[in-house]
Image 1 (cartoon, rainbow, N blue to C red):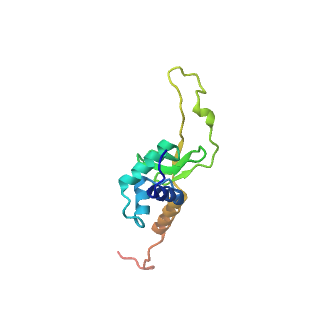
Image 2 (cartoon, one colour):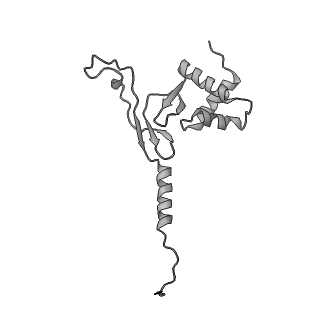
Image 3 (spheres, rainbow, N blue to C red):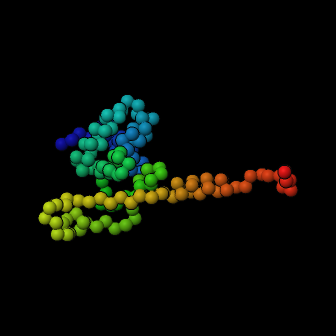
Length: 147
């Protein structure tokens, strides 16, 4: 039986509070403000133990850094290609994909993940703001022609 230490409780609480599929580094930054004695190595150890125990899910996306979330019902993810934010995709999970639903004697399917990528709402708004700012006409002296 694994111990439920104060450090583990702090990491799990942070993971639940953050709601943004944080990386171990982001969890460390979040915790370090109030608990400077908890090291990044301890956070990695607790996250890895949680994955082994089945209470934390490691989310690997194409930004090559592991993100974490408390285990909940299976679902898919969407990743912003500009800011790397990960959010849950609002679509139905397809458990039938976890089994050999096609005829392939050369491969045994054990599970699946689907990652959608694009641009999150915040980055869309920021890009629109920047575009509008660039398109704002500069102040010019009208009626003067220099030749």
